Image (cartoon, rainbow, N blue to C red; front, side, top):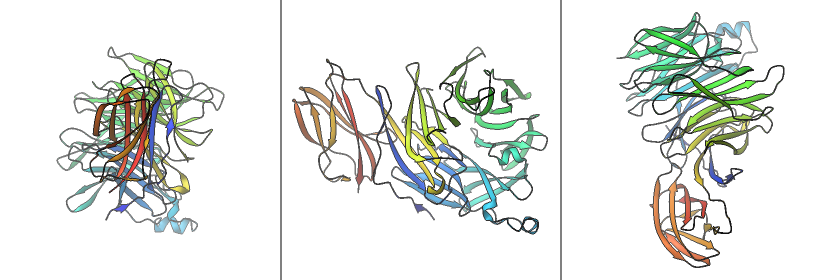
Length: 471
């Protein structure tokens, strides 16, 4: 049975500190304490964001689908929540909160979710089986794979689905990095690397799996499977100790990596970008300045392969995002909700909306989506615009959106409405407006949720506002 997460009634508008504005719309996912300390985010073929995450206070797993207005949550049955009898005998202080679960999510071409998870009893043996759970017509079905080591229990495992429905899972086994392959309902196992921590698993353009492996403080490798077996190669790193790295594949299959490095002899951390070149070489650049309190970066790519990196800012304990646009990196706050521990997740949907998910401790699991809208900086030649709701808010869609557009000079203005995935819902104009305020109604389809309204002037000005709609 699905449970509905409530929509936050007040929605923040956060502005990038340059001539680009991004409307971040926050949504709570699960308000239970500690929810999402381990979480995994993917965009399904239908464009909807999907989440798998651990709920320690339940405890168990949650699977959530964003329906355009809020997250629909479904519990995923797995294993008994309590520690094993042997653990309780040896450690009477052990409770259900001693159990942690690391999660990773993939969604196949039909929209079926696949969740790889590992159960870690911190008072017992630090090894445990990898479980793969997927939903079929009869409900959730779980298969047990090999035993994973502590490295995986710390959250370093991943799952992906290749074309044709072949499922791949990568994790640290007792004798190195293992890759499990499911085809035709049968699992087979391969040695992918002699050692290393699994940072990310991705599927290349020809259906081949690729692994990002952390081999030590000064070692980062990409392992790829070919007909001749698994082959690894090093990614050149700058001076420092690698703490964490994540992988995405650009159009054409070239690797893009975000890495967190600690400077030698200090606690300062830097955020780095590594870009695989067509000739097999690498381009790298520092994204943040030395001393920036970067932690747990996670990479996502826009529709054109442009880089976006979410991370936890240890100075402010907030989620932040950096974007690569016009050959420069810009930073912005995602939301004011605090995040002190646990994993972040980020993805970009087909419409260009960036999604970031982060745990907020006792306040549960949070998410935010941003439809990037580039503003033209005002000048003496460009008239600034404003657009606002001219009526009750939240608004109802029955008689259209009542808007007020203000311009200091006569102009021609195009008015558009988008959902948070970037899909255009309605448009009117360009319409002629005089200097001052112009009232109008913009018809939009009946729907509930958040809509972004954008006004674009022929002279080059642009303004954006957000509207909460009720049925």
